[in-house]
Length: 293
Image (cartoon, rainbow, N blue to C red; front, side, top):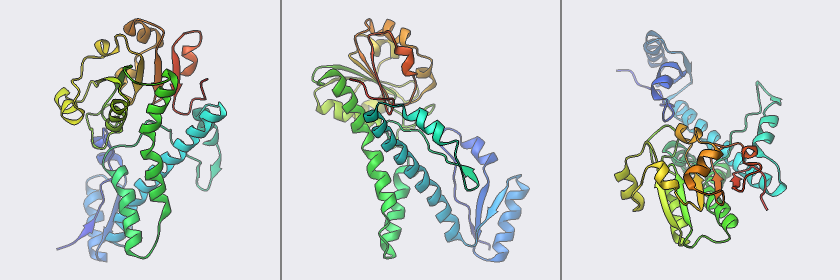
């Protein structure tokens, strides 16, 4: 028989597209194995990139996720600094990404409310453990995990600072899935966000158009309700997941559903443009979108 490793690199929410369009990394155990696996994928209409061994193929997958998690960590720390300097991190990122470097431009990803899913949370630790097993202390995978794991706490801190305390405040968490357009809750940052609000004595409501209600109830002990009901009389609206349904909201529709302009919006997924809240009493605070006094 022939043996080759072809690590799966599909993203949550776009598996079919990725399966049919992504270049497949192939690492055969022998030259004959390599030729057979490349022929298999080519017959399927897939482009391949050959690496020298199964180990190199698996390390390619780890390198991808190591880079993504570390890049997001850079974006998140840039966002924290931008808030203190009173500048918009998204503006900075878009400008920074115009610089050519090597074969491509600089490509800083966007900050957010936290990293979830399976691969990005798991693979950096796997890389760190591999380093330990070979006598190496690899710092970057540990740093990226530490930075990204603090973002749920930062989201809660933004709300706490705006409300001057969270006890008995009505907090509405929009989105429980870790990624917009999906129902996947694996390692979702929404869970620690909800738990931190609960620990501060807040009155919490959660809503998500994709995740089954019973799943949210099982995981955090809250019975979700429909979006418009959740928003009623909210003291703070916390955007955790970038679902398309939330991107259809406007400041005016939020105000109408809340029933007041005197509330806080914490935007962890850049759903809104801060300028849209100009002239309104809503206190908008987005991750990396400048400091609000």
